[in-house]
Length: 126
Image (cartoon, rainbow, N blue to C red):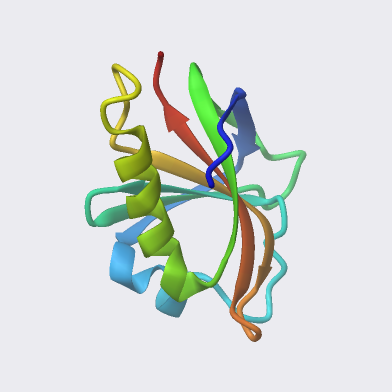
C-alpha cells in the first residue's frame, strides 16, 4: 500500500548530468561512491536528469518541487522502474494536474547489495 504525503522537495545542487534511463546505474552511478542524501534523479520518459550535491559550498543551484506528493520506497535498482509505474497507476484518476516527471531523492543506496531507499516526489494537486 502506498502512503502519500504532501511535502515540498527543496534540493541545492552543484552538478547536473543527463543520461538515458537504461544507463543510469551502469554508467553514471559509481558503486563505490556514497550518494546517500546527495543526489536527486528526475525520471521523465526515457531520460534521467541527475542532480548532485558535490560540495555544499558550491551548491548554488536550487531544485524545488511543489506542490508535490512524496512516497518512500525500499526497493532494488531493477524494481525501481516497476515501482514508479505502480505509483503512476495508483495516482491515475485520483489527482489532477499530475506531472509525468518523478524526482527521486536517494536516501540510501547500496548497489553491491542492490538496495535503495528513495523518496519519490511527484508534482501535482488534488
